[in-house]
Length: 177
Image (tube, rainbow, N blue to C red; front, side, top):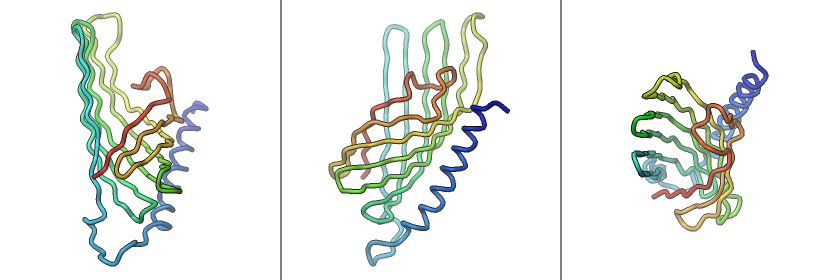
């Protein structure tokens, strides 16, 4: 087993254990209603990019459960289609688990584990078609105002050869209603 694979497995185990213990610690209701749906918030992202023979579209809905004013956890889906005329097309489908923590109302810390299935098909014989799973573990820091947060996140599992992202650092804008 390669050293980098061992590091990724250890990181995945650590994140899973951390999130499991976090649920128990922060699962106290912060109001008297006990109504599950009153604590669920929905959000997501939409991306669209096009140019001379290029198209990219993304839909990424998500939902979080607000355990208390400081802590939330949820799930997301991701679907992306890219194509460059006469060169390639790719389909990316995935799921993510996100944890949000606000030490003070204006600052949001986040951890997000994302698992993506990447399928790339090339129109020429220069490259081999690819189909593989790619994990990403983002640690983020953002500024929050009401239901909008913007900031930056870093993929600690970044692999330059296989990642769908150009760089491990990525800005984000997060909105939950």
